Length: 206
Image 1: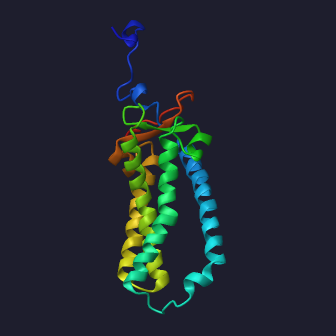
Image 2 (image 1 turned 135 degrees about the horizontal axis):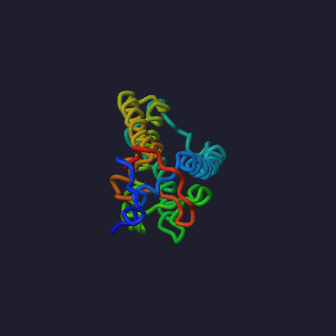
Image 3 (image 1 turned 120 degrees about the vertical axis):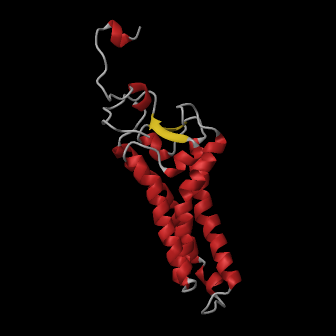
């Protein structure tokens, strides 16, 4: 006999099972966590920009008006190693740590979990963050081609794909669901266990 039966009450038709939906964080903490993590990334990018400015003479000497295929490939590699890879490592190392959270998530009392609420595997965390970083990588590749004034069609396609992927990752997270990166990896972001659950909007699902 269920607790509802013993109390003489029955749940309303269409009511959501609390244990299924209690984990959903509200949009506010999600957005705030992104802003904090973007600030961390911004500090790193500012440091890289300063280094590039101070050493610009060494890597601009002998540059041609139209970059060669080799120069374009080298630019892509440098961008990936200097910006995207550190970003992914930051996400993976913090989300596989004991606290299971980036700095932004820790500040906002969020953690990364498996789809069932247990601890996410290292493989799953890597996968979620590789998908999450894909829009940034595509944007960098597109912008670098626009700046170098080459492969204009590819530049536009990469930027459009970047925006579409970013939306697929972010928008579902803001309406009580899981973004593309979490669905692919079988993970979710939830409130820390010690945090009380807020009211769940009717119809909210994942």
